[in-house]
Image 1 (tube, one colour):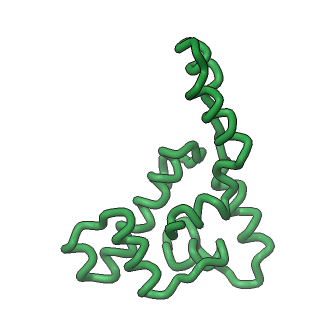
Image 2: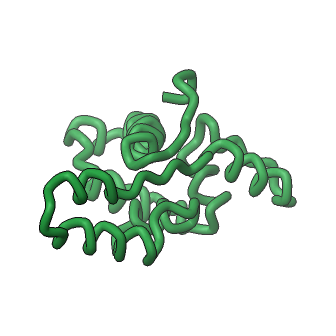
Amino acid sequence: MGIFSNIMAKLGFGNANDETVADVAATAAAPEATAAIEPISVVDVVAKLEGMAAASAEKLNWKTSIVDLLKLLGLDSSLTARKELASELACPADKMADSAQMNMWLHKTVLQKLAANGGNIPKELL
């Protein structure tokens, strides 16, 4: 399981029931049944993160910092972990060479990928 998968799991993306429904839909005989059974899940990412931030003893600015976002989720926020996440998400080489640029790219890309996977994220954060 990759780091991005860990981020999604911490935020409640996907569950075993969704996968089971998708598997059943994929094996359904009628094509229209497959489209009707396709699971759609929306995760209110902001609400979950705001709740975590409120319960955290540490003041973390997850809205702009990938380090704080990872810390808030209880994940490794070290440079090594961030480089691994950047590689996993196909960060451009020029940004990988500069940790500040990589961090900004990572934060934006993680939020965009969460949105693409059913996360309800406001446009101002994207």
